[in-house]
Length: 296
Image (tube, rainbow, N blue to C red; front, side):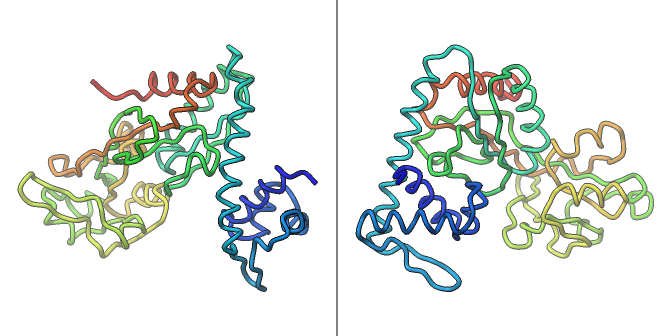
């Protein structure tokens, strides 16, 4: 029995939510995942998971063992990394987590440049607007928008995250150009689907605030979908500057309401303090700061 492998499978099954999802993550069959769990239970003489036809949940003993497994696996990863820390040349797998829009517009091409500079490093970029657990999910570093509340992480400031309001010239010719946020309800506005549940971006003149209209001509859960609709002249868009920068430069979209834009949000590159010695990570941090370091 490979005890460490079985512990890894248990952690994956719990965090993925099902044997099938863990199997896909670990490149195993669901049957093999189940066998690893059974071997663990036989080895320990205790049931770790309560199983039903649709789901499984940790027993009390299983919950305690799961937490211990995560700590053991992290220590194993740290021990393995000691060899890498002794090498001057960055190498190995570099796992990065980033928000979707910022990730595909800036982080993905920047990571590609880094990998070209360091051919012994392999990259794994995970794009999600959920906050990742660096230790639990095995990420070396993450890009986070907003304040960082975890004091266990090193947080290096990057360029702020700014929003832009824009529309295609054709739309403005048909519907006119809004000069004040109070005019937005009379326009066709394009909204991110998340804003329908949690409106966070507000326009302001310093004394009064306005929200982006809840009644949208089109809502979409991806900024690229809204960008495509805006380029077709469907309506006004409010999206990150990094997503619309090239369209604005080419005049395909025109900026609007620049005096009322939402306040920029801080962006940080974060990583665990005890991993800063890894050559692949330290060089990546240097690369990111050189490319996206906070503006003076």
